[in-house]
Length: 67
Image (cartoon, rainbow, N blue to C red; front, side, top):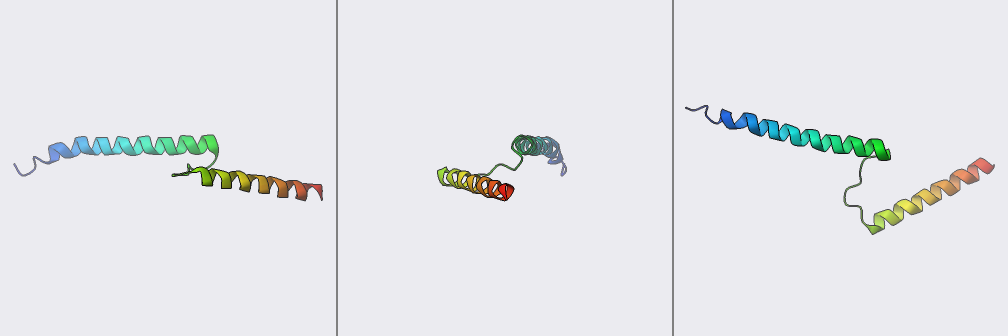
């Protein structure tokens, strides 16, 4: 009677395992599609800084290529 709790462990383990599989699938699909992991909590400031950084990198790479 003391091992009755084991009946609940198997379904909970399956559920927890499937949640981990789904989370990892989302992570790897996003990483494959965008080339980098998803930035959690991206607000308008982060988006503006990403645009600025991308513009600066492109400007520097075009300046290096012209030399």
